[in-house]
Length: 131
Image (cartoon, rainbow, N blue to C red; front, side, top):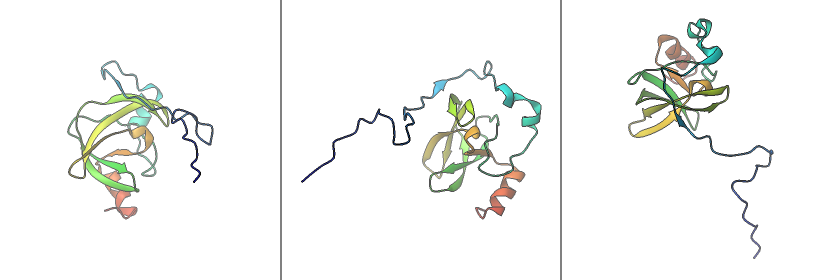
């Protein structure tokens, strides 16, 4: 019986992309620079779609919507202070979220996977058939 040799998990993928972990690191929010996303035009805007990366600063205890694997959106709560790591849009904040009774994970608004629980976002969720 032939078995394929084991691949080193640290080696690059078929696509040639390096699959190193994206470590979360401590961030001091008083010193954190949102860069271009700190501009007032971003802060006053709304996303056009649920999947759109959108900068947003949460507070501990805020009600949110988190996009989980399986394309499901769940209502959750911010459960602590964020950490920083690379997002689809560059460096960004990953917020700890508790959802679906007993799940917890870090999610980033700049990855399009975390939205505040606002009337505009609820309308998008209704239009998408989630609510």
